[in-house]
Length: 83
Image (cartoon, rainbow, N blue to C red; front, side, top):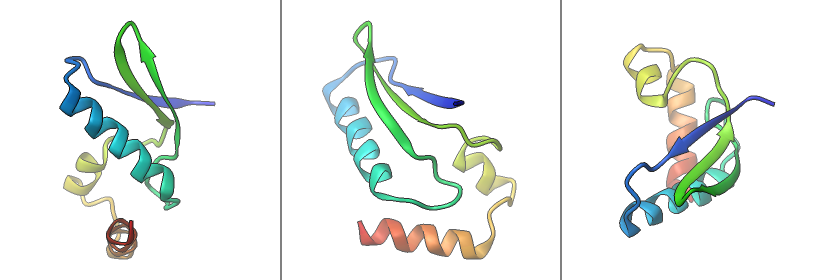
């Protein structure tokens, strides 16, 4: 399966906590357009988030390009607020 990797190049405790928080939050969500989290790994001391690959770029890029429907934005926002 195709996956996307998100790595923290500078390992600081605060950044590691942020990555783990992101993984926990994303693991609770099941929404179209948001990747499923498969694992959090460590490679040579660098924490890596292994997630489902979704074509179309990052969420920021998709928002900037106007690729998200208002319905998708509303469902995603509600789901994030409920967690």
